[in-house]
Length: 92
Length: 289
Image 1: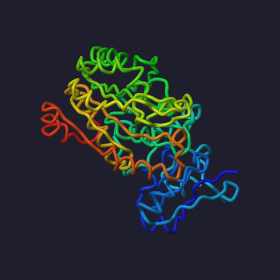
Image 2: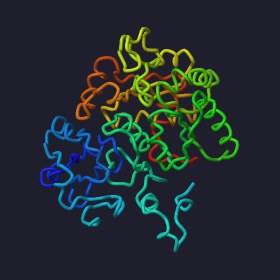
Image 3: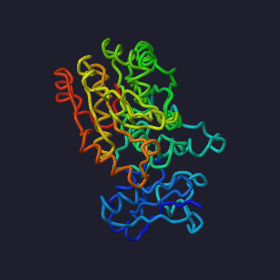
């Protein structure tokens, strides 16, 4: 079992800070939903390093990202299935 | 090159992977993207097998965003961790033999200038500390002495991470590694000073603690290399495996090392400074000749 980052879209959407998208080592893993103004995670790309959690908690001080076991993720976005989309609404 | 070159012929879209189509529709080609837009466009690097939380991966990701003309760039690398991600980028990557990266890049840059006299082609060498400071050292130094116009980026993780943790010339003195159990005897090589001595036009030392600064530094180095001469960036990209850094603390480590001994510094020759202040700084977006 491994964990992936899970972003609370309500907290994140209120801030629009985008720091986690810039510090994630993996490309196109933390994406940004331009419609709702929130970051979201491609669960199939996330390697679970938790760098984004540190960035959100310590640097941005928003505490919007938590690690979640992969089997607890509900309706996670998988970029390998739908490809890149500019918003999560479009992706689903 | 225009976007037309990479567009899929009508009717053939469904036969190509959607990753390719995403690059055509929302990719970083032709119009340069900014660090602040990351997450809102399809990036040039695809999925790759580098370790979770690797700072080198972050640096490489930022490099692909920062290159001023991605479709006119060629990256030269060699054996080492970095090539695992660089080889998954949508930019030509030449996997040189160990030791010859800068020699290959010299010939390539000269060849591209002859073949495409009306276009700017950027050659960027991106390899590890072992590939550039140890095994490729002679080629690096001679490309600088010859004033070859390309950028050399050292991904300095201060160890041979890919082969189990041998000390490199860039390892700190006294560091005990898995394959250097008595600790390193010599000092860390001062490549910045060597670059200054060799007449490198623009030199920067950077840690990936500030993505915008990393991207600006790379863009600056590539633009100066086009017009003035060789440029060199030395980037601290910790190896969290060999240095046993828990992945959530990778950025904390980068900040500590940056504060301690890897602070951001940049150095221009007079000619490079004059070019950057008068011309380079004013160039916006993707640069086409």
